[in-house]
Image (cartoon, rainbow, N blue to C red):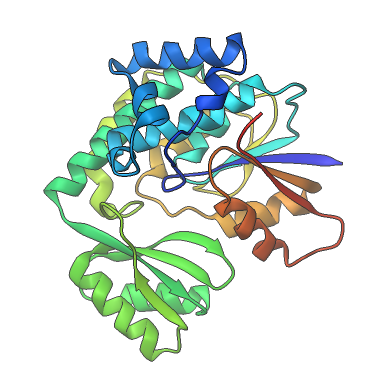
Length: 297
C-alpha cells in the first residue's frame, strides 16, 4: 500500500474549524498559539468563534485552512506519507506537513500570499468560472480565442475546468463554452482571478518571500501544481512555488501521476471534502483505491 495525503485549498473553511485540535493535546495548542504570535492577531478566535462571513476575509481564510490541515497532520500518530500534494493553497500545507518548510516559515508565506492576492483582487477586478463537461483542449481553445485575459486556472477533474481572468472575458468564454456544448458554465463567487496573469503583482511580492525561505527535502515526494510531477529537490520545489500563483493547478494530472506511481490510499487532510470527490472522479472508481477524509483527530 502506498499512502497519498492531499491537502485542500481555499473555500473549505467553516466556523469552529480546528477548535478540537486546540483542546486535543499539547501539540495542537502549542502550534495554534504560535500561529497567533506569527500572524500578529488572534486567528484562533476567528477560527473557533467567528462566523462564516468572518472566515471569508482572505487574510483569514488562507491561514485558517493551512493551520487546520497542518496542525492536524502534525498531531496524527504515524503520519508517514509515501507522497503528498495540495490544491493551490494546499501545496503550502503539503510542504509544511512533509517537513520541507518550518511551520512558522510556511505560515508566514501563506499570510503574505493571502495579503498580496487580496491587494490584486482590489486593484484589478477579476473572476473565475467552472466549465463542466467540455474537453480540456476545447476549453483551452476558447480561452485562447477570447478577447481579453482569460485562461484555464484549475484542471480539477476530467470534464471540470475552472477558468480565470477579466470579468468581461470570463463572460465571453462562458457563452462560447455553452455554445460549444458545455453542460454548465458557471461564474464562481470568488474574490478575484486566481492562477491567472492578473495575479502577477502578488506573485512578485510572494516570490521575494519564497526566495528568502529555507526549503529542505521533504520526507516524501511532493507532486506540485505547476508540473503535476513528483520531486524532493528543494531547488525544483522553490522554482515551482515561484510560478504557482500565475500558473494553472494541474490537479487531474497530479492524481493520475500519483496513481501511476502506486498510490492506492488517498487521505484528504483538513477541512472539507472537495478533494475526495475530485480524486474519485479522476480515479474513475478504479479497483483497490481507498479514498477517505480526515478533518479531526
